[in-house]
Length: 345
Ligand SMILES: NC(=O)c1ccc[n+]([C@@H]2O[C@H](COP(=O)([O-])OP(=O)(O)OC[C@H]3O[C@@H](n4cnc5c(N)ncnc54)[C@H](O)[C@@H]3O)[C@@H](O)[C@H]2O)c1
Ligand SMILES: [Zn+2]
Ligand SMILES: [Zn+2]
Image (cartoon, rainbow, N blue to C red; front, side, top):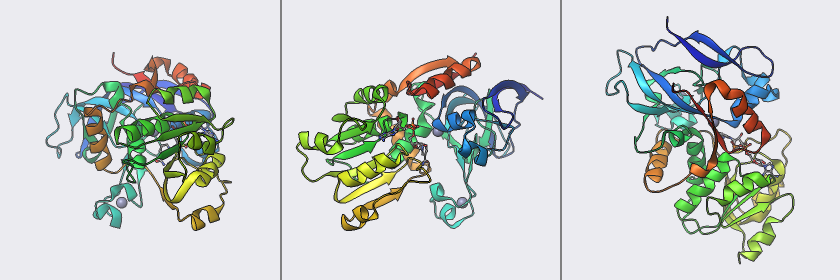
């Protein structure tokens, strides 16, 4: 059996360990990927911290991580058209293939999905084996560090492209890496004003680099004042909730125009309360977003990057995989965008 280095949640306690484990053997329908770069997600930080969500969700031991780029090392006997050395990333949600939505081609709405790095072995390792149906073939002209962020970039694109944004005024709550990538997509896709809020000045500064119309520090300024300065009289046409914070969501509801459309990616707190009459009387549409559309979102992010979408400013840190602790520290500090771990040696 081949051995590999992997970042593991070994026991149900805070922290992670780098250990040597057995490399996976691909099944007949699987592709074995040699990992080049991975990026750390907020989800991985929850698992590191071992918060209530992680305690409820994760069964130890497990290799964590779901954002990656690598090359094909080996393929199962049923797999055709993929060759050793091909540059690939992959969809982290594994679908059942049998429920009504899967059969109808709406795989992102699968009734029984699994997720790599959550309920099956993840990609923070030298090798990852996933079904061939989850492999995304990559354009070699796109920098590998950008491809390693295709999963969260896909979250951002799925959310932004849920509604028509050409010529519209867009409010984004939460300038985390995904909110910032969403802002860049809004600009790329022809929105008029793109206003993004956060309470963290470091994050707002990062967001400014995407060319947003305005940033709002929600702990100091009112969204309506900023909208007023921009000459907006009727509120935002499209809202993208990317903070998971109840105050941010409430402020968004109040800042929307009548008939406005909201897509929610941010995972809301259990106690989140909203004034439902903002939704009813103002005729708002609200859509929840989970994951990425398979594989329309992957296609769109590839073609947007090929036509000049630039998310490079959201990548702020690089570490070799054996310095993963520093990567998690950077994420936990709030003073980071995407943090990349390099596995090539
Ligand atoms: N639905 C899905 O499939 C899916 C997938 C990935 C991530 N997510 C969620 O999407 C959200 C964004 O992801 P991320 O990785 O960018 O997360 P993140 O935690 O890095 O970013 C959230 C940002 O919201 C900011 N924030 C906190 N309070 C705020 C307030 N009152 N007003 C404005 N901003 C405020 C934080 O300072 C932070 O910068 C998270 O909630 C994450 O859990 C959902
Ligand atoms: Zn992620
Ligand atoms: Zn299904």
